[in-house]
Amino acid sequence: MLVPRRAKKPLWFKVLMGLLAVIVLLIGAVALYLNSIYQTTNEVIDKIGTPDTVPITSSAKVKPLTFLLMGVDSRPETGSLNSDVIMGITLNPQSKSATVVSVPRDLEMEPKGLPHRKANYYYPYFHLQDQQTAFAKTKELYSEFFGLPIDYMVTIDFKGFQKAIDELGGLTIDVDMDMRYVDTEDGTNINLKKGVQQLNGKETLDFVRYRKSNRGTEESSDLQRNKRQQQVLDQMLGKLASVGGLTKLGDLIEAVGGQMKTDIPSSQIRDMMKTYYNIDRSNVKYMPIDGEWVSPFILPNQESLDAARRALRAEAGLTAPYATPTPTPGKKSGTGSSTDSSGTKADPSPKPKTTPRIDLNQESGTKATATPKPNVTPKQDVTPKQDVTPKPDPTATPKPDRTEAPDSSKAPTREPSATPRPPASPTPDPAATHKPGTGTQPTPTPTQVPPKPL
Image (cartoon, rainbow, N blue to C red; front, top):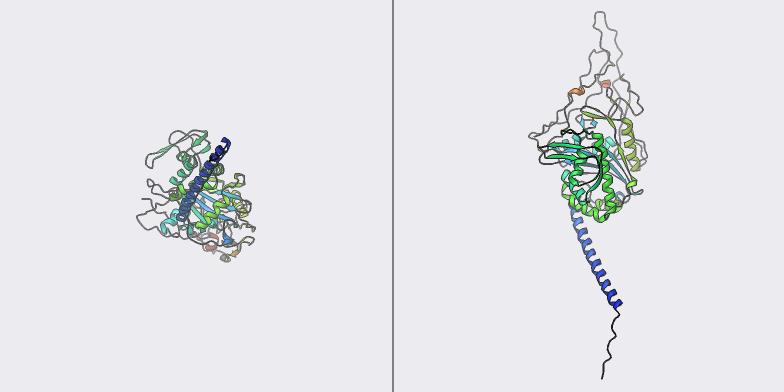
């Protein structure tokens, strides 16, 4: 008996089945690859972040968060912890937007109860005192400076920055000037030409760091460096949006994980990745803090500083107006200055006044409280007797001598040979300590000298 022969499958059917098989294999391979990346990224996130549990109401998915980002020079060649990049960043999940404020590293700061130094001094200072509390103390200081609570802090060193740029395949940067600087001691060799060009990690780091020149090129400023930092951050966001979003962000975290430190809980890092991985660059606002160079500091422009503070608070959803700290008599416009945002000079004569204090725990819509700080009631002047030497004008306020300010461009080293000196007591308010009629002037408290580098 003859068995009927099976009909041959059409050629198109065989081709179709072959294509389907290839597609299934590709999907399986991609799934395995993504799962591998997910597992690796998760392991890195668990190492970077803290194990703390985050309440649903505090998740990055629903609550605006403010971060302090610092780029730290921790190279063994320098033996320092200089904070060359300081940024305050607020993210808002409802509007999928962000506000970034760049703080000049040489900005003059006079925080209460701490040494009078540049902005880049304080994190290394706290780190030398106690590594376990350095983040908390630095956040507290900058919370007062920015006028809103800082939720988390992140530091990344030079090596991590270079890895991040290389992981993204480099960046297209508009170099604003010729840059040439060589330092044989720490290995720095900056050599960039003006113009739009593709930069790798090392070159991008040179671009954001350049300030001094010793090879005939024009020197830069701290304020110009801040603009370069913002350009680089903007280009990084654009690159993330164009090369794979969430997956590329995972690769980025994996690449720089060993050079990054933070107090963000691991679960919060995952929520942030899911919420902001595709943020539109047009929704990111960059706010500079302008100022004037008066060696060895940059004195901030008060209007610029107030605008930056308002922008961060608005992004965070804090509707209460920012309470500007009471100016300190005898200082130029800036942080703790004698000129307010309207340009009105402070009256040096003793009179009762109120010192606003920022409530760091206030929620949206809660106004900052002002705690009265009464001054010493001035005594009535006694008419001097005859032949008594006339007394100096009690309203005269001694001006600080900036030429004798210590050079704090170098932050303390990480491993000092001696225990750092305790913070100096804040300089007393001349209006409160000087008693008219005594014939004496208040004596300023000497500024504490920072620990010497090794």
